[in-house]
Image (tube, rainbow, N blue to C red; front, side, top):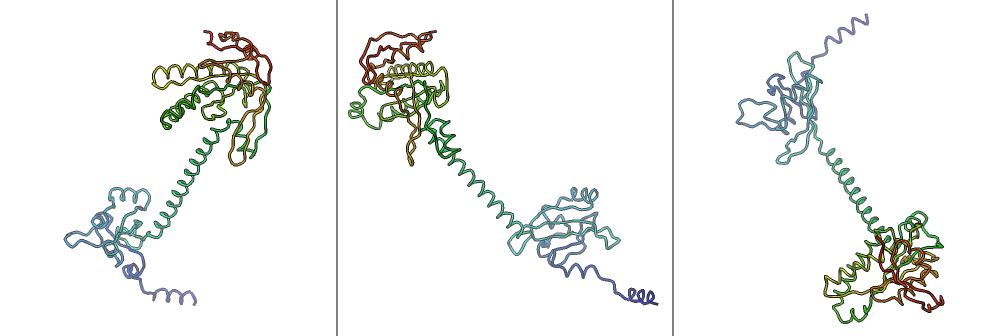
Length: 357
């Protein structure tokens, strides 16, 4: 009894016209012939977004959508049963992005393809915002990295790398004592008079060129430039990285600095003549300052190196006997005599002449 009633009710349900159904939905849809791509039906929204040209004799999907590739669509429909791509629709004179989906229309025996089109403007706007934010984030990250590298370069100009790494990791550094390191001190003869009698900009520019060359020489032999002060230059070997050949390395640096100046003087009208002094002894290295960092050396080893430079002669490298003992096997030295050194008593001094080949 119930079964008959159900069957009778089902039989009285009217068939739904698919055209009426497709016309009423809020999506642009069309039905096209699978073989010719001729448009069989389209709802109002599809016609609005993809208006037909009046002069066309045959209205096909190819004429409505510029980005539609029929060969590719046929292949995808055959292999996967669907084909998707992106194109543009029109709202008045303004174009906007759309996503197009093709699939067989199952509600008819005809070989029709259902074309569904969605407005993806909002989606694209969100994606654009995300991409813009990502690009901005990457740009900011690159800017931060460049700033970090710039700060690192600045700090490495005033302290050795090992000290910088300790400061970066722990926020502070510990003064270190080195029982034996080799220090080189240099200053230029007559620099004050030169600075007053010549164009200051040209003089400072030349001094910068010279110090830049010195920096390259120091780095070449694994030494550290500690600081420059006016026309003075100070370098060290054997700290903060221990090196058993510290005296040999600083001697090679001194000789190449002198050679550089000799070659420069031969090619330039302005002559730069330097006094150089070196010493090997105990040294304390420490970072000083809170807002403006300076890495400096202290101790008798530094003081004696300064005395060697002060009593040296133009374009000569002066050292004491203790330092000479480290160099006798590899360098040519000449005796200079005994001198009274303030704070250190009588010292036998030597000139460093050249490296043995």
